[in-house]
Amino acid sequence: MGKNSKLAIFVACFGITGFSANAEYNIKDAIEDAKLNNQELQYIEQSLSVKKLDKYRAASGFWPIVNAEISQSKGEGAKPIRAPYSDVSTNNRGLAVQQELFAGGKTVANIKIAGNNVNAAEFEFKSKTSDIFLKIIDAYHEVILARRVYKISINSENAMKNKLDQVQTRFKAGEITKTDVSWAKYSLAKAVTEKEKALGDMKTAEANFSYVIGRAPDNDLVYVQANKIALPKDLETFAAIVRKANLNIKNAKEQLSASKLSISAASADLMPRVTADINFAHREVNSDDLMGEKGRTYSLKMSVPIFNGSTYINIKEAKYKARGAEASLNNLIGSIEQNIVDIWNQNQVAVSQITSVKEAIIAAKDALDGVQQEYKSGTKTTLDLFESEQRLFNAQVEQERVNKSLVISAFKMKALMGELHQFNFEVL
Image 1: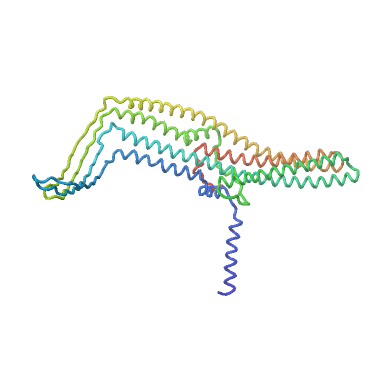
Image 2: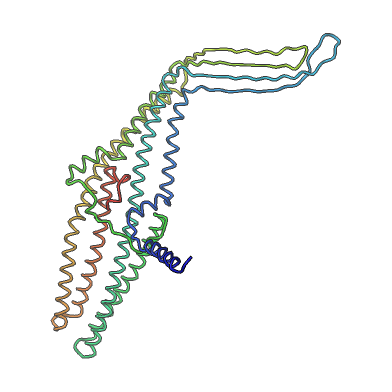
């Protein structure tokens, strides 16, 4: 292979590696990584698979029960008088088939109950998936928030260091007092403390990201633009969607249906039970004096319950559980109604704060520029200057917090509407 070919391969490999290293990491990547690594997601998926087996378990009530039996025995067989006993070897083979013909409708009820329970489990799986997605989204944006706050705090610390140098220079020139120097040192110490706290918060956020998503966060996390998340335009539309599509309400309704059917299943034990049995038997005897035999038997059995105290208790219990499931559904609906208003208000407050916090930052910057000019002319004190710096710092931090609140509240709305588990993160 020539040198040019080797160089081309090297450049191509380097280019691919470099592209991979510099690729941006977005919320869709975080969701996909969590699907592979998050143990809670994997657990609820396996739990759903187990629950789906209930349908087959209930349907097995219609299936026949088949048992096979094979045995072998050895002994001595009797012969005519005064003749010695002879060895006898016996082989037995049998096949028994039992088919339930009627059980008071219990099997049918159990199949319907299993269907309701599986549907409820699927809604619960989707709801829990949405909850985990919210944890992932929160962990993702908490890293972005913590990193930005840390960067702001570093800039604030550097600004305070520069201000301290300026104050000390003016103090040496006799333009300001020692009190001004003390204020400058205090402000720098406060900025350092805020930076150290921001660093600790950032490390905590990154550790939580690793736990929830299953890998360390990349250096460049793409911020989600909240305006790309399609949401209802008014509270009435939002409430109507939630009442119709909320996963927890659907889950509770399926559980209520299953509870009502359980009454029928329990009552079926008061009905007659009819079963059919077929038995095939074959017996071989290894002896000249004894003969083998084979045959089949058919039977139709009907059992009529006269009294069984536990049956009545089971019926009573099923009725209590049905009433409890209905009360649970009504309570859940009331809770969801409250969540509709709470989450809508969270989003609307965040939307309004976005505009106000931007205006606050512009005002804080303008105020700081004015105070700096007046400080140089001697009409503003060192304390005025540092207070103005602190207001700008607070406004910048608040902007980052509001940005995160807006995104999180939008996704909470999606979860409440039953849409987050299937949300297309590629559109963001």
